[in-house]
Image (cartoon, rainbow, N blue to C red; front, side):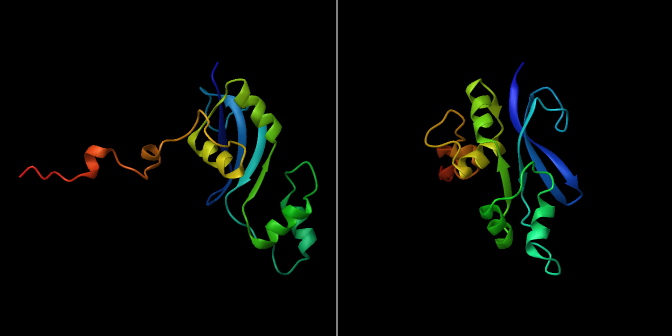
Length: 142
């Protein structure tokens, strides 16, 4: 059984919200995961101006099992994206052989969970930033 770390999409139309999950690779995207490892909200959601800041932020964290920290409150105030991960469990799953998807690798690199050279490194050509040497040079055969 191959286990993957991937993002399961939730939320409404045009307002995605993702759960980082460990799941059997043959299962569909939103199937029951082996374990939920965190949450990722790609859309910055500033608090509504009419209500008090603390209550609005507390309401936006209703899915979290804990109250938001001061750092999370400041990030919400600045309109930053929300990421809540259990880094210890992510490292456990990577240690036992779970394979992260490319999008998860990018997020883990940005967050500092994957540092330096690791075996899931995505080549520049696959990211679309580089081209193979044969295609860089024009065909000047004429």
